[in-house]
Image (cartoon, rainbow, N blue to C red; front, top):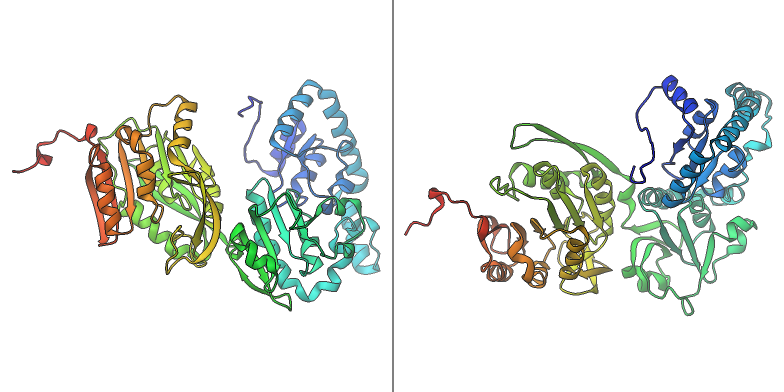
Length: 514
């Protein structure tokens, strides 16, 4: 749509979908998990031209659909748009490929042939080589590692879910991990797989397509140094575990028997959607579906109730003209969803450095709409800091180690004033309208850095985590804002709502009584 291409997106039953595939010049498909899905054959069987994402060689896609012969593929958003434009300008090529694929379908892929193959396999023990799946490296080694199937699934499923959301992932596997772990991951096409020097690469199939996907990482000479890894898979006694754990977003640790003994990523494979309903100030109904981790559902629903029902961020309905909202410490996006309900047309900027929360935030931002997610935190300077997260919940992450969060990792923090100033300039905006900061202890540093632009912010929501911080927050904001509402849980915890002195309503009932 951004490229102004004539796309039709809709839900249809099988018959209507087949008609649309047949009548459209191009039928677009995007795989969900990096595997060969049924939509590919649905398009071809209807006589449509298939343009789909490029999959890993391990999926068998190249042998099955042969890009350039029976379909075409793209590897990036840019390439997708370029190929659509090319075929719109050269429709004859698209129709030629579609015709060739349809003829191949009738001869080899029609259900009657598949049913016959299945029956011959079941009753005669005959199976064509086509079904042998020899493209998949696991074909050659899985039997030898069948006792580790639970460990392999416990690693593969969370990484697959991460791969579904992220465009690129960088994975490092220590030299003493099972070869099957690497073979499993090779069917995820946007994965960069690195193995520690000494890993038995020779045990993988001697196939150029395997060799090109697996990179040997030599720590001493590597240009990657201590760069952040998206996923680290290592033995508990490996030096990589202790040295790189803080630099890895997600970690899988195996014992000497290759059983999984620790991971902060298992919850990625248990995402659930929860329907959230509310009534707007104008009386209209509003619904949204948010993603939660199943094991954290109770905490997430509690936070949702605090924000939506108990209004921990009170709605000041007399403040209008809200167009830009900044959510610092957005977590999984519950507050941003609340702001979307109140301000349907506002642009929301979400900042979150915790990778566990960030995964859900990216999913939820698609539901919220008009949301841009930044995978880093804001601070008073451009800096990397040790960040502590909880292995139980994504709610207590902080740069301060505490009883709830003690799992360390290094995260990127960006100077708030520089980044937000550049953003406002890029969109031609004058000011931020609403600023919400919930950073488990970094609120005062961010406010100090934003001091020069605070005067133009209409509403500021903050959490404080010590009495000292509460007093300092008030000192910083006193010249430009008034503490309008607050919810004090106890001396060292509460939520504050500050209103710009320019927007204080002229209401006799709210005048001071002297």
